[in-house]
Image (tube, rainbow, N blue to C red; front, side, top):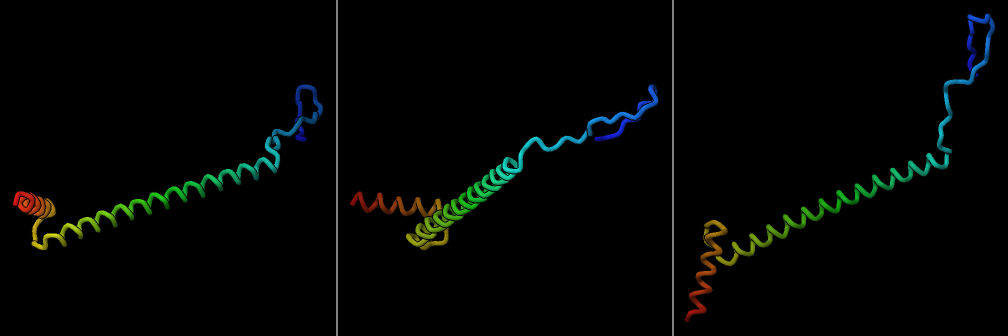
Length: 95
């Protein structure tokens, strides 16, 4: 309770405090914290999963590239290498 000095009437009146207690009970506050923690953990798991996917994509891409380079071991671009392989396949199938 705060004290309010009313000068017009010359007396002191007690008034309710301006501070209001938290509207949420302690159990609701802890529930909100738990929800926030779960949301954060879920977000972290999603990020980790996405990183693993990116890493796996890069790995598969590198494996494909190595495979095609091993098929035709001549120093040239991958496009040229694939065209040469396809040409060889077309030539052998026409025999």
